[in-house]
Image 1 (spheres, rainbow, N blue to C red):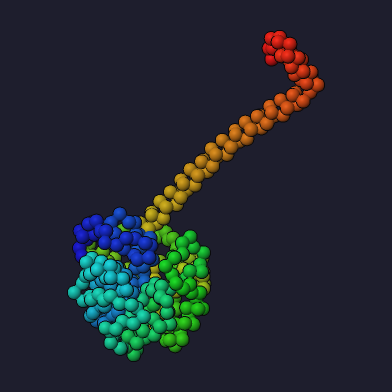
Image 2: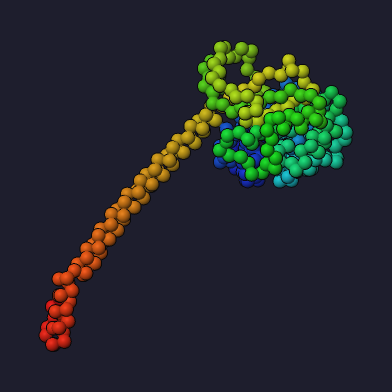
Length: 334
């Protein structure tokens, strides 16, 4: 896919918040993009010349990205045929094959047939997480490498997906994973807002939307850094387990996006504006309610006075006099 293709309106997939759709026309996916692509960027150094499985691949953006990093072959598997059709249309690559299958058992794939397997944000969707991990173990070659992530749905968050069948605390995810694979290196994924001072970067023509990830920053691109706060892995926004990679080869990762920050600011602005409008509306309602209460109090006071007047001796005598005049046929002027 060329960069010009990305400007074409795409309506093949309806956004639900679950499947990441970077090329979806009219959707601001900058915040989601850094969240999703940082995981694939972490895998990039390990895929060259290997046969790789991406399960569940969703719309295929990560599957194509792995192929662009030099993988010998990439197989993308997803249970949803619509997503497979979308991936085949918009994220095709000569080294990529897409298959529709349940992730619990991919019948068409042979035992120990992949050098590296990635599965990002999948396990929480499946009815049988342990069976799924056993299937991943079946497909991975002895000594192969596995990168598997899972969100933390116990974190403080404004949005937890209704599509998640399981909610894993870190110790639950860790213990389940280790019961199948024995050992792993674990990372926590943390969402942050970053401010960076960087040297000017000359713009250049882009032939792929993934060029930014293909060309990593030079060593010591950042000098000194200031870290205010980072929670423990138990309080992370998600977890990532890595099998078959020496811990010394794994480094901390960061994914940066100025447009994501601008989108965040815009969202905050709209939320604040909506809050101001709601406050204004509440104030108007309160004023109207106060006016109504005052009118009701005035009416009640008038009614009380009328009742007091009608029950007075003068009023009773007046009513009696008018009654006598009516009986005598005299004119009555009340």
